[in-house]
Each structure stands twice: as structure tokens, then as C-alpha cells.
Length: 514
Image 1 (cartoon, helix red, strand yellow):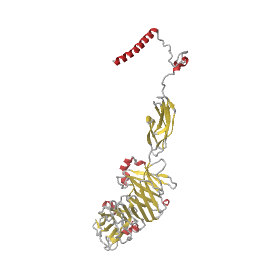
Image 2 (cartoon, one colour):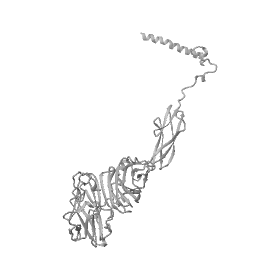
Image 3 (cartoon, one colour):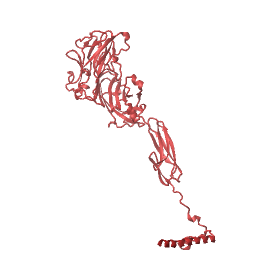
């Protein structure tokens, strides 16, 4: 709750203008207490803890004051934390008490403070506002709209006052036949009061008081960061709550929380961000929770993440992770809900609250069970390696399987597999280099292959004629003269050549000395 947290002073003080303007020309009067416009409209602090932010001053003006100057707040209250986003539902109510219908809206010139209708009192969107005539709410006789605040203190420093000094409530009487929508609370004071604190950009503290058993409660997280602005939490919707007071503390992180550990689910998804939800109520007693989160499309492009592959995972009581049904909202669906176009929006439903992870379902093609058809081959002979490829990931994928010999590629094949599918790949290549060769498939060593040495020549004993003498037979190490098959004339010519060569050597020597 805003009033229970000590912070650096950042005052948010808004004073309502005393006059309410009916564009039909009806008189608008400042009546005592909380009644205005000839008793047609009643503006008063809402029931619940956030109603303390609104009060009537001595001039009988409605004052919205979220600062230490508010006399209704504790003396320990110091304001809203700088550089955070905060919101408070159920600050004040506007009730139409006449017999006609009226369109009601608020005019306010501040940029950091926005008046919003509570979700239980008007059907709106995440970005609903009550500011400006186009955002009016139509009230019938005795219908009420409960108004809350969104406070954007991001980029602000301590001591700054946010918002304009005044705001005005405007109303326009309309004919019943012109009324297309009649939304509003029942004015019975049974709507829960919701407050939000933002201790940091990645933290939210939600409190809902006086909730009805079986009722619904919505917590607006206002883009709470899980991984900076890349992935944010936008809204948490509780359905069929057990009733009473509810407290929910939410923390986001790009890294895993120590108590839960990293995302380790079936099909091995890749983690993008983590979310911790600590609660004071029996979440299993509720009908379920819808978590709405979004991502920066530029971030998804850089990371190569397809929106349809994004899923939310929940840490179970047994220590595992379960994938939750997660739906991306396309452009038309997002616009229909009033969501900003500059984000990719997702929603997921869970029956319990714990630690969550935003993950991406990815292909996981792994190579296993590899074997060769030979361990020794001749140079240039082919060798075949058989391997099993399995996709253990969550989506279809493809991979190139490569066979290398001493780091050089000798074969490759492209494989495409659906999730859970397997196939056998045969890679056949040739190795020309003799010796031991290391075969690897995708850098994983398979086997050392022996490539035989090529034939270096013939065995002399195999070609020696039968009966020919050997060096051992002569008892000498001198060469043995073998029949050469050369005739006598040939031998004479050979002797002459040898004589010429022998005679030439001294001649050369003698010439060199001259």
C-alpha cells in the first residue's frame, strides 16, 4: 500500500476545481460536503485504504493528495518513490443521482498523473483513462464510477510535484435513446480497493482489500520490467478469488532466481526472463490467474525469437517446470483490447502462483550413436560413418551434419526434423593421406582411422632367377655378376665407354691444374 512505505518525498497533490461544468447549460454548484451540480453528482473519497488519498478541504473542494501534507495519511508517509511507476485503484467515486443519463469525464493537464476508471466499475482496457470527452463513462440514475490514479514518476527526482494543480469533472446530460452503453458500479461499496507500489522498475507490491469470495481482481503492473524494456509484465488478473485481503509481491529478473534455479523443462526451451510471485492468499482456492506480458519487437528480432514460439513456464512444487498455454496477440487483437502497437503482447493462464520463466521453444538437433564401417582403409578408399540425429526441442528445425578427417571436411548432409523425430544419416568420404586419421562428426571425435602406406616397390628375392648366386653364395660382399643378356659387341662398346669415362677424369684434372 502506498501509505505504508517510507520513500523519498515526491509529492503528488491534485486539487479538484470547485465547479463542475455541464455542457447542457445546467447549473453546477458547490454544495456542502461532497455534493455538487444541484445534487446531481456526488464526489467523495472511496471506501478502502486508498480513499485516504482524497478528502474535502475547508473550501469544500475535493483534494487528491499523495504527499506528506495529506492530513489523512500517517505521519510516516513520505510520498511516492522517484523513478518508479505506481497506481492506486479506488481513490474517489463519482455518483450520478438524477433521473437522466450523463456522460462523465475528467479534464486534467498533467502528464505524469492519469485518472483511470476501476475495472470493476467500468469495462475498460489496460490503458483505460477517464480523461477527455472521448473517454467518458455513461452513468444512469444512481450509478457510480470509481476512479483511481496511475502515477508515472520515472525520470523524476525527489521534491518534484507531479500533475497540474487542478482537475475538473465534466458531465453532459444525454437522452436515454442516445445511450449505447451504461457502465458503472452498483454503488454498494462492495468493490475491492486495490493499491500498487513500485519500489523499483522490476518490482510491484499489490494489495487488494475487501475482496468478495468468487470475485475477480485485476492488478495493473504498468509495464514492470523483467529484462529491462525487452520483456515486461503488464497485468495480472485473478479470477474467483477466495475473498478478504490479498497481497501479491511481484519481482522480475533477466536471470534465474536462486531458490528456483534456471529453466530446465522438457524440450529444453531457451529462457528469456524470470518472474517471481509471492502471495499471502490461497492461490489454489482461486479459479485461475491470467498473466499478461509483452516484449519489444526489436528485441525479438535481434534475438531471433519468433513470437509464436514464446511460452510461459511455471516452476512446480516438485521442482520441475511445466509449459503453460500461451497466446500471442496479433495486431487486430491487440488493438481491440486497446493495447499499444509498439509491443508484442502475450497472455498465459495458470492455476497456481510460484516462479515463472518466459521462454522460447527452440529446435534441439543432437547427434548420437555414431559408428564407422571400417577402421583400416587403403589410400583413396571410402569410409562411411553412420550417426543418429534427434530433435529434442520444441519446434521443427534443421542442421547440417559434417564429417571431417583431421579437421578437413570430407562429407556433409542437411537434416530437417520435427519435434521428437529422429533419423539416421550416412556420411561417406575418402581419405588420401596415409597414417592415423581422426574422424569427427560436428567436432565430436568418432574414431581414429588407419590409412595404409602405399606399395614402395618389389621384393628383390621375388624377381631373382632360379639358381642365381647370392652374395652369401660367393662368401664375399662384392656384387655378383649376373648374366645381362648383352652380346660381346655390346660389351666391347660398354668397355670402350667405361674406358673413355675413366680416361677423361685424369684429363679433366690435368686441365684444371693448368
